[in-house]
Length: 111
Length: 115
Image (cartoon, rainbow over all chains, first blue to last red; front, side):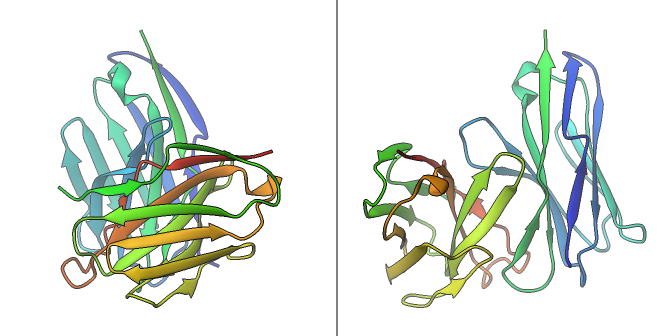
């Protein structure tokens, strides 16, 4: 069964600090992996997308990495800001329409 | 920019009522999706549609139906709302013709409470 596991479930960091979120998956065949940011009460917004051949992708202070051999991805947030407080969802696509969603990591950035 | 809009941000309905959730996208996308999102469970696919008048069941279709009469509009219907359908409902759209990565664009969500 295709699964996407994220860790930690929740995280609290001080403003200005860095953090790394993890995503492990068992989806096969693999097409691509996305990280979404979801603010409270809002729909998810795509941060990065990586295909099999890509092992890193940046979007401002967000950097995602992918190791397709070990089926692991990470999202690194640099110099966190209060506005980074959100849920971060890892989504892995096989072929076709279906997406496989992780349950998300809830990040709280405190002053 | 892709825009996906949902008819209501918040909705309160009574048990047994028929509920319509509307979703409209303005990017001529072929595919549209309805998800529900619950704490600790993540997003789960209810139904999707890859063309007008076409629909496919997702992972949790029980208690729901959908309608797609026009390409830009996808409706989710709760025939007889129950308290276990209290949830956040998210609509999304994508275009596999233009974007083979299947990038999905989400609406802002409808928080439905069934009392």
